[in-house]
Length: 252
Length: 240
Image (tube, rainbow over all chains, first blue to last red; front, side, top):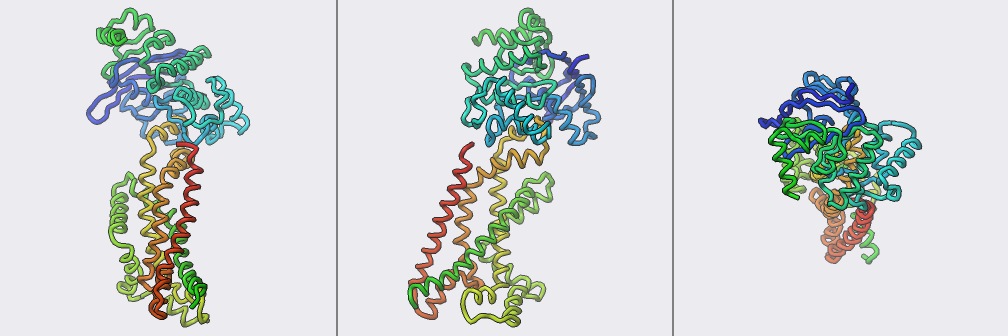
């Protein structure tokens, strides 16, 4: 059984149809990269998965249980939406750490407010997570004292603290300079080795190619091509994919 | 009248200034919050009513608003409630011959009308500062809270509020400093605040200098406020 099963997701903003019916699934422990040019709907897709946008039609099932059905979403209570969205974690392009809290407090805030254990347990878990992203020495630093890469690593630890089934990344390195990109990608790679299930929207083609198990190329709100990195990068079938990938090479 | 006597006489007046200042802040700071929420409401009529109220309150002079609160109950309902309170206290209680207690007792009703006018006026100004502060928080902060499964009220209380407070401290400091000087407007309905007291000395004893001397009271108090508000600002400077 797939950990994630997405069927027929459509989303329009006004008259602009951003997602035109997407279907895909993801197995436990797999890493899915979503690539494509800006405006192709990648971010909107992630936001639909995380209930930051409500898809107009389609269903989302996690571990075989339908957690979103556009046909019945209006009947969901706010508390149910909150419960459902915890299947997913989201790491933002712009980190969105809470500036008034230290790195550790950023991680412990949600588990504490949602009573996910005793204060000692939560602190121990957060300490372990911050070590996992390599920031044990920055526990008490505030976001403004951290570099972009460090902030993003704290943001990853913060998302992990709620134990999501699927961790989503929305262009996690786009706001970072090349030097800092590496440290964030390394953390994501480590997570893959620990068998986390992840969806990564990215412009890092090297990363998508080397780390993912599955790649989706999106264009104009549809999945233009889907397959293993070898299939998509080495022998793309769609002309749009070919053109997108060749532009990437030209740019370099 | 000696310098000390004049100082005490003016200090009695400054007590009225401080009462208006304190009550306006204690009532106006919380009252501004619901007004701000109404101004941001998704429900259009609520938003419209709130905007009109803020427009009126910010649009006419505070002195005029004091007159309105003080006189309108009498004009509309035939019951000048605030001056009636003054009259009732004068008729039914033992009033000391002089001193602060006397001033407070014979002006209690009028003082209430001033407090109401100041509170409404300042709450409206505060509400706009709050609204600006709340709307300046990036959408990403809310979204980060949502994806962690937090409720709207948890997000507001635990994430947004402190950031809003940090951003509104400088504009609030401005309003607070303006407020202590605005209390002088209370003398339009004969509240014996400090400038009214100084004018009293000018009228009864032909002393003009106390009028200028009142400035010292304001300056000292504003100096104190500046230090305090600076401390608050500094306390919140550990994040941005």
